[in-house]
Image (cartoon, rainbow, N blue to C red; front, side):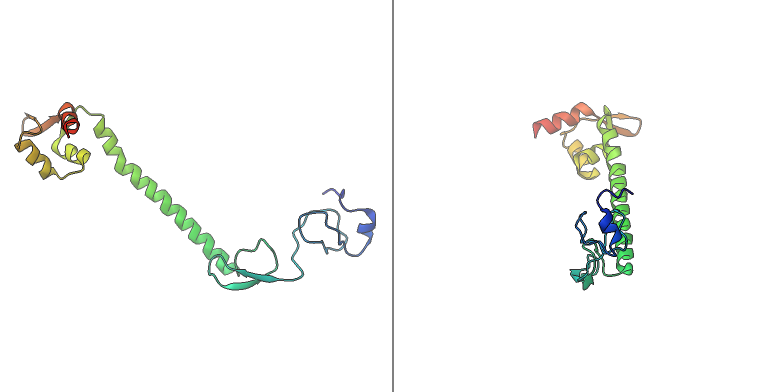
Length: 155
């Protein structure tokens, strides 16, 4: 590292007490100008981010009261990341069929119920009351997308 911030007289001294970086005054022997984060002379009270217990911190960057809390917090963060990824995966898997159904011109009773957000039996009642016109191919009852759009526009 460069020694541009430490002068020859500082290097010859036993300890360096000048503020030449953001950390507290450096007390490292024969400081060569490197930027090092040093511990404070006077520890101060902090609260652990993980266990919420009070502890004495010797650095301003300390977040956890012990290595154990740091490890547990890391593991909990990784768990939360995985849960978030799982939720987005499940959401995409659930919405993918709806997107595919919306693009189709001919729909089954189950697909119409999924798009409308009602039960299959509600769609059957609407068909029976002639609110939705259908056509049959074999034993399957199908509904044109236009009929569904007409139903939604009329409401």
